[in-house]
Figure 1: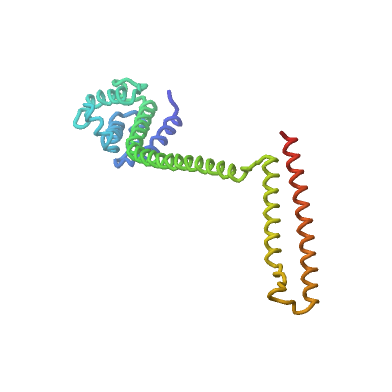
Figure 2: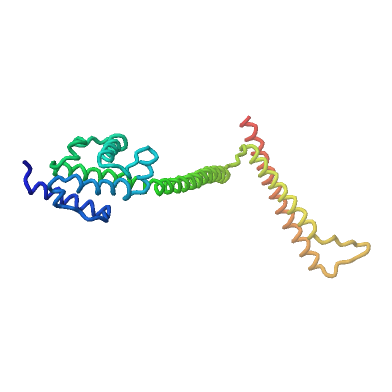
Length: 256
């Protein structure tokens, strides 16, 4: 036989579950401890038909109506629910459940029934909420993916722009030595020509004995001296230019 302590422990567990489902009726603890079927059937009936309206509708849609039945027919349908909906096999037969005794086993079966209905009720309650959250998360992930794709495109464009900028900054123009020397020679000739032009424009016209006379002999001597200095400088520049051109031509010939 089962000890009184085992039965009392099962009753405390059942009492906790009854508070969870907010069982509104009176609980016959004396009948439960003795295994009275009439003490168990009201608890099972409330759990399956009243605690969770969505689950009760599911049972009706499945053709498993529990209301308005005798104890025997109610127990038959109860075992069909446990078998077909929960895939649960009780430790008691239908005949044993309707007999007196087996109090601890009956309490254990009722606790299992309450837990099964609670689990299904929570699943049905959370399903729409979970689906809504999943839809929201999927939409957010789609937006994030779109932003990431755009950022990837912008990064590629920036990298391409940087490569082009670096290429333009590092670009070097090269010319041959011969072309460079030729260019420098032309520059020197142009400078010489410009100097000659400036010198000629600054030389005063010579004194004409037929029409003009010098105002004084000192002024004529100063003009002659200044002209001599300028001509000497031009001569030296021409010599330098001539030697530079010869060196440039010889260098070009050797390079060939």
